[in-house]
Length: 432
Image 1 (cartoon, rainbow, N blue to C red):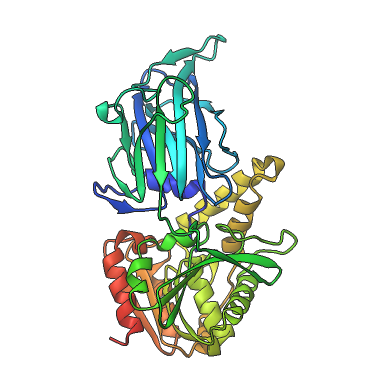
Image 2 (cartoon, rainbow, N blue to C red; image 1 turned 135 degrees about the horizontal axis):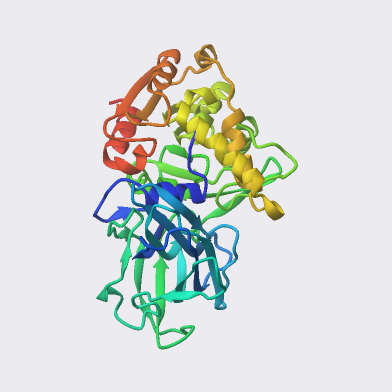
């Protein structure tokens, strides 16, 4: 189970833990924060011009906005990287909303994900008291990026008002075809897995699965969480590729893989996808590292096709929906209601499928796990969204199950504690 659904992932990250160092991620943002303490209940609109060089390689970019309230809660959040199509031509993009009654700061900025060149220009913030048609512009520092971007106003990072450099991204001003003036903002993503030139597609089970392969030796299949893609394993790929042939795949409806709209998204259908995928790669037996929903798939593969699985390591997996903490499960149900309510022109169909997947499935019992005969490492963060007692019971129910609870970490332990996480899994795979 992975509470990580597109823009929900971004909201969590923007509000996430403090970290002021270079981190690994497949996305970044460039942000400006403006005080709006005395404009409560006013309307606002943010506009910017955006374009990108790459259109069809799975890259995303867009405009985003978040309002922070005085009590540190969120009053408004929107990220446009889904639902809009950015092309190589400059186009205007807009976000509208209402300033919350307890608002303190509005954060606006540029978002970029995966490989490519992403250009932004002419940011503008305007407010309206709701009583007149007149919009009042609030000046932004260096809104057209004509000055040095380090001169103030803007900051890089993916955590709330924390300056954080994201590896694989460079941010600077560019004089190449700006929308206006002499320069625009350029965010450049490079060498990010999930959109690499050597990636391939495999026809399986009526769909196309996208995958990338790194390293040589014994195979390790890596399976991502619900709203993730191949790039979820950016912190694992290099380390594991030194020892293994790492195969990372986008599961159906995620990343660059396709899906059949006429078939329900279930763990069973994804398990069949993976079986056919491995068969076509002529892989007889593999180790599997699964995170969240990927961990569920690892358990499913070990139960349904034990002859194909050598060992499994599962982080943040559950075997029935109630294994998720009650408040998290309630939050996911509320998300689903809102997505269905706002599903104009089917724009939320994929998100709805993903939420329904984890609200309905899997429906296993602890006794079912006795079918798993391979060595199995069951992992969770001590602050995971999966109930700790559920994780412990899963490990206890597998004949060759082992348990690892990673301290000071959440459901995102593979990102938060990558060195410890990688060492645990590799030691387990190597029988240490």
